[in-house]
Length: 352
Image (tube, rainbow, N blue to C red; front, side, top):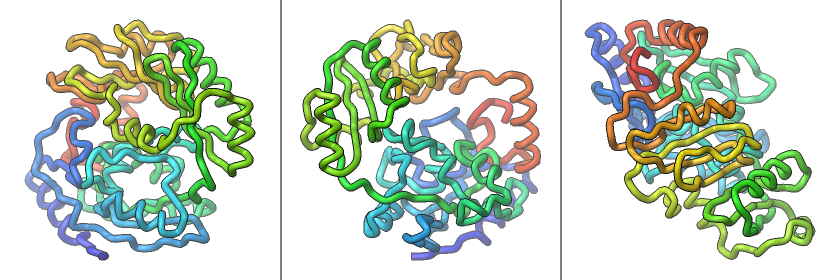
């Protein structure tokens, strides 16, 4: 059902700007844990929902920001299509706008590409009550395209995502997951090798001495891959990849702070205590660390960066510190889109 709540959202934002009242953008709130905690009057987006257009032939879907992510995926599945970056839900109430604003992707990200690469266009409500449209609904329409991509991962500090146009892809013909026993160093080497090769790998994960590799293609292709790669076929493997995407895998259980380290694929194992869970082509590594232990320096030392993804201890900063030129760029963008600084203030950094 199409529910256009643009006028009410604009009115609430303009009133908040006039009064200097901070707003906390709230869709399904399934990713409220991500980023720094903020105080603000909730700006509810779930009342602004509905799939506006879906052109299966053009592989494009446009929906309002408050549309449930499950509804989007169900519509695509009816037409044999999917969101190729496998976004996590972290709860049944997840919305499309929140998904794009958080910029998170699942197991397929290293091979399919990041979420921002599939954002074709957006309609955005800025912090001073303007409604702006960027990009379009086809790849060749690049007017404002980079601005639309900028909204992916911005955590709502630049604007409220009213509508989003996303490029989608067909579902694979088939899939197969293979498991191989090896240590972390060998697993990192194998993942990096696959990233450079031509095999139809679509996901990889290592934990507790076991490497899991997912391949997609025809049965004949998958049979050839199995003969070449070896290992053990994992039955009912969808549950495995869903548990990694939704962080219901046993590794993620517990209350210790969860760090996400993004590092070069062949970076050596990080000395953070305990064994990690490795994803993608070795680019993403998860660590459970004791309270007070930070991964910022360890990730930076190998040319990467770290994020305190989940925490219960009121950490001062969640994201790695920015270089001064990037700080100026972020502040300039914030001023341009949200002059009064009322949208999700402090969600990314204390002064943004």
